[in-house]
Amino acid sequence: MKKPRLSAQQTAPGIVSGPSWFRDLAVLAAFACLAYLPGIGWGLPAFNSWSQDTIAGPNRTFVVDGWPEDWRGRYPPLHYLLNAGLYRTIEAVWTWRGLMTIDPATGAKVLAPPEADRIGLLILASRVLTFLMAVGTGWALRCAALRTTGDGFTALIAALTFCAGVDFAYFARLGNVDVPSMFWFAWSVVAYLRAIERPSAGRCAALGLLAAAAVGTKDGVAGAYPGMALMLLIETARTAQRTSPLGRSGWGTVIASVLMRPVWLAGLASFVLPWLFINGAFHNWERFVTRLEYWFDASADTLHAQQTRYDNPLTLALVSLRYAGGAVGWPLLATMLVAVVAALGRGPRRAAILLAPACSYYLLTIQGALGFSYSRFLFPMLALAAVAGAGEIVAALRHPRRGRALTAVAALLVVIPTAVLLTALNLEMRGDSRYAAETWLAQHVPPSARVGVFGKPQYLPRTIELGYRVVEIEMTPESIAASDCDVLILSSFETQGYDGPQRDVLTLLSEGMLGYYEAARIEGRGYLAPRSWWRVAAWGTEPTGKISPTIRLLIRNRNP
Image (cartoon, one colour):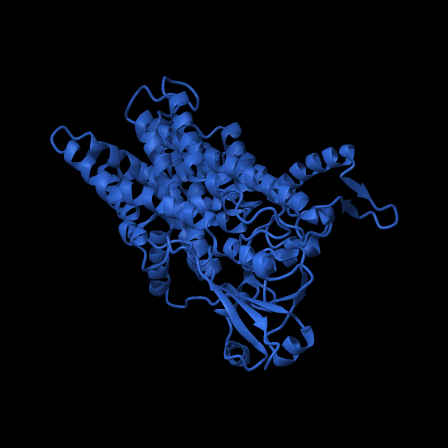
């Protein structure tokens, strides 16, 4: 017997049917263009993206050459492979136009100058793919909410509630894996809801494939799927107890019958086999095990050796709450939490279907495997909360007596602050302090100068692209003296992590004791700074640690 949709309404359309699908898609696309596109060229063209933790860049462009036998990427290979498909298409055009050749001796790819423009185009291609997947994530959440509520406007609100988060907006234009992972996860939620309605082999297989794609893009999202599996079993058992003759035999017989259904094997195989293949397990089992050790081994060069775990679960919960506020803004987070609580009170079964994966993700990934949190780690939970609570938000706005007042309050306290925060993010990216530092260098430092840099290139202005002879320096008196540089560049994103001897050397350098004086100090425009009225208006934290570092430019003192 076919199970009814989760919604009580009888007119819920399918994914692209009904009178509002084109309107909803147009709204989501227009929102994405306004909120995400303005910063898509941030820091380009360049050899290195300014985005931290990106997988697009010169060291990652051709990394798929080792897959599947010897995969050494920090993340699973799937999105690297999708990027590689884009890169190969662009490279074919370059080869046809004579802009790229293959060295016959080494097999290395040689790009025609300006090389930074070529690499920058590859990074931009990866960002465009991320942008499209961000729009696809919103559309998937709209489809998920449509299946649970049957109301097109509610479904659109669910999608916009999540997509308007400032941290998602930040990553929606970059070459990181967070948004691509959310794309596959969001579509797996749609497949999960379809399987809840009728757990056929095809629907379970679709869920397994999409789950494999999500986990094959970013491992941590795996924590959500045990919650989905549990709810699939519970809902199927509830239906069988109510409609099957086995229901008269008691819950034990029903549960045993449900567990033995072959559809689960279809779903499990559709997840496990693609996931093992994506991660190269069939080609190099030892390398695959090494990837697993990155998550669970406390030895060097693993996740837990690089990050500090919170041993107190309550402390981690509070840290996660703070990051959730930073991910979407506190007004929007408060609205989502109230809506989720109301949804649990009004329809606990429907809410539990969506919140069980969020709970398992938090317990298994955040509290369990990771033991620490960042705002982007909370994207799966926030997306599920947006879908679960959207119906209550719209019901409040449609209230016959209080609807208008609540709409006005929502606009004043939620919509406007969120829009302000998104605008501030775009303004900050377009006015990044490193642009001004590059202008200062071009005006005051000749191209023949030796420029010394400290730390990672994604923290710094684009010096190689400006034609300077760039020297990488360590924060020691000996390294600084041996570099014989005319100019030194310091980024606060690098120096804020200094301690001990490095901090002492930085103090000596700042005081002019090592033969250099500070000629310029360039800061961001402050749209996202703690003192900024933009931030006060939005009541939220944001990616201030990723945009507009303080850049210090030190010139050699020729007359000590």
